[in-house]
Length: 361
Image 1 (cartoon, helix red, strand yellow):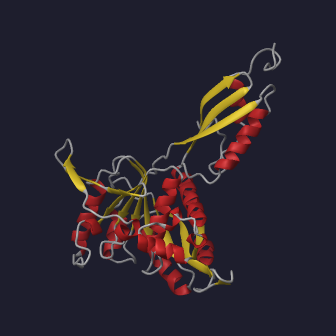
Image 2 (cartoon, helix red, strand yellow):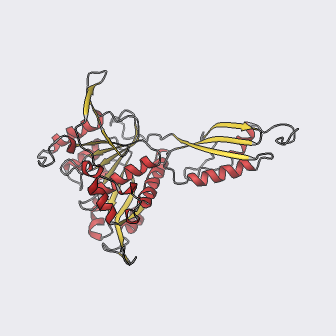
């Protein structure tokens, strides 16, 4: 019968699947097998290998899934080795039916703020790069046309090239920096000149940035929204095929009051709220290690409880975060202690997990 037998024969693929059917998906519920997450099972004697297909490469519970799946398979008599690989299939979450999806783009995330000055663009840039670091395909659309900051934050210069598609439509090719596909009005106008446009012109331009740009294939298109709840922001929220909105705030009450207005705007146009990110949550002095709550504390936590929306993370105030934005090197690619790359990556994983849950709800 040999070492790898279980009473009457060698280990089979069916036994492996039966063992894995006892492992639950920790966020979505249901077991890995019934959710069709187990792929490519291989049995070589006592060595078992299989692939788990996640709903996002940025899954924050990847290690838990690996450990529980390995433990389940090791319970099969005769198993000597278990190899778990991961792949991901990011599934789109349907927007409002009349809003045309962007070809080849699975999820569109609006990063918004109730007011300016809360570091919305910094958060958008670093979350985009963090999602890329986790293995996702990511684009970033700088929709803040009156104050475009992504060319500076990514150190990207030049004009997008263009071509005609098979329908004769002009298509722009996004620039690329740090692995992110980028489009911004800052690539098309002289950076020293103010953009003096009325709302309808801005909306028309942004529709071109969505539908006449060669984005595909993307798991996530991050949109850095104009701040506030004015005409342009409202029109965008109404017309974009959004998976959901992510709201950035700082801890103090004057900022969180404006957050409620932004959330109400998205609710009115039926855009789901993914969660809140608290930026500049606190400052740790590099010389003493003392923590200072410069902008107060607890504002985002209160909002999260009050509005029943997840707080996806709190990002400290760090000089390297600011320096990275000024130098075209997003903080999440830095190993400086006050760049807080690990915090940005944790927020990105929480964001991806929340979108996965929403797309299966």
